Image (cartoon, rainbow, N blue to C red; front, top):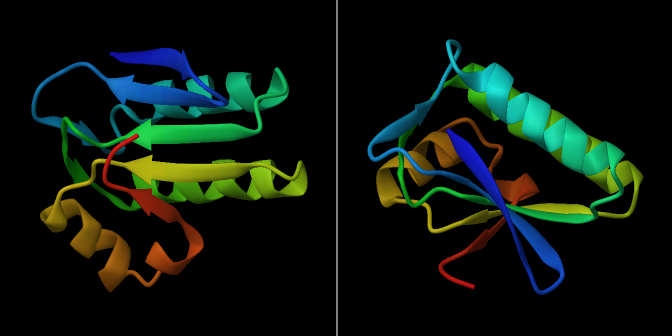
Length: 105
């Protein structure tokens, strides 16, 4: 279950479930939230990875698609509090270069 929190000029999207995964069976919910935020005019979105322990290619695809939409609107998508293990997936697939990573707010 994802929640949205407005903080300063960012909207943070966070999965509240411990040991959560972003993968094929649940990426639809994340896609829906990101698309709603983008369509409503949000320009700066952070995905909080504090509780995320795994991401697959469908999750990476969803993040890339959202990032592309935001860039078209002069916005940005950042990644917050990512673990080294999950960051390795971004690095291994060579898409880490497209995101801004933040350790904390």
